[in-house]
Image 1 (spheres, helix red, strand yellow):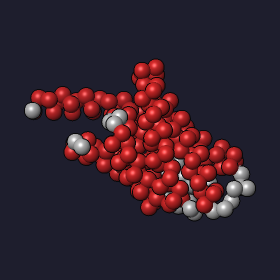
Image 2: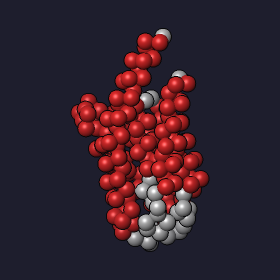
Image 3: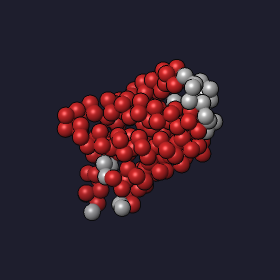
Image 4: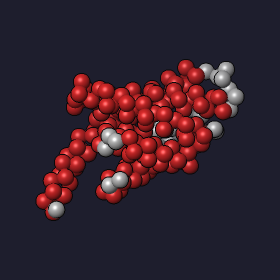
Length: 174
């Protein structure tokens, strides 16, 4: 594994953790999961399975430690790896079709997948399968998907520019 890439991935996880911590919860202790957007960005920038697995484990662990949702600790450890591998597969299969618009579109889809896995896990863990999955999905997951999509639309072009400049600077110094 490349140390430079690991440092960049850890920075993304750190930024996601800060964003996750500062956003207030808005429905039964649930808050928008900005760590997802950073995880998705890491997967798009470094699309290798080994990085995806490491990034999902780190994101799941940090999310589990910072969650305010009852049962969210275990749900995050389930959700992040499932979502990361699914997102990675979608990205690899659709990157040529979607081209430059892939990041925000895939972020929306990935957030919806993550939210579904997370909510299903929480409801199962808490033994509340009769609770209204649909209402929680609409009030937490859909707004989070919108927020993450808008964030990715802004962050991804900036990250691409930084990657191009650091790659050029790195190749000059070698």
